[in-house]
Image 1 (tube, rainbow, N blue to C red):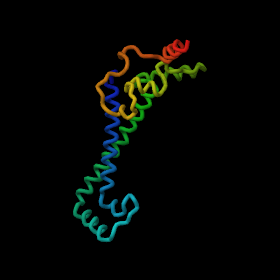
Image 2: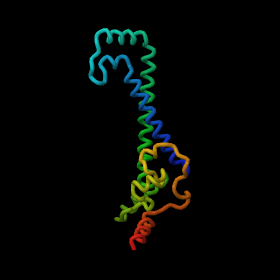
Image 3: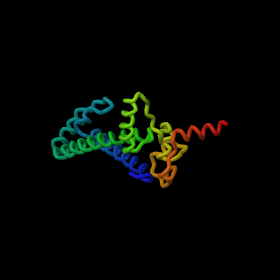
Image 4: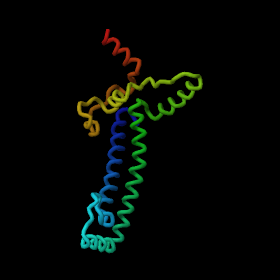
Length: 172
């Protein structure tokens, strides 16, 4: 993943997780066996339940396909949501995947020496988020695809030290 396409990769994971979860929910909601007693607790009449049973017997193949779509959608949604969670952690801590493993090793070395390791590119969760998705007045606008380039040039990155120095210069 590169500087200009990380946002799109993250949004792809978000959209894929949402779409698979949607397929699972819709498939389960309209399944004849599950709708004998609705999700709202409403118990349907005997004629309606009989209709559902007839539909289930007539559509046995259809119920197998529904089961497969629930299983496939559920497993894809679960696995991609784990990947999405990991990349959310990386975004809010200001790391790439490679930096995550390097920082982990450097943190272990610092801990062994009795020191504390601090990621120099961690500007705080909100500033890290803006570094990837760009500034926006509306928080939900970050979930929409955009053609605007991310902040920076991809070769130089602000560090927590430079942000503190800039903030100190504004105060003085």
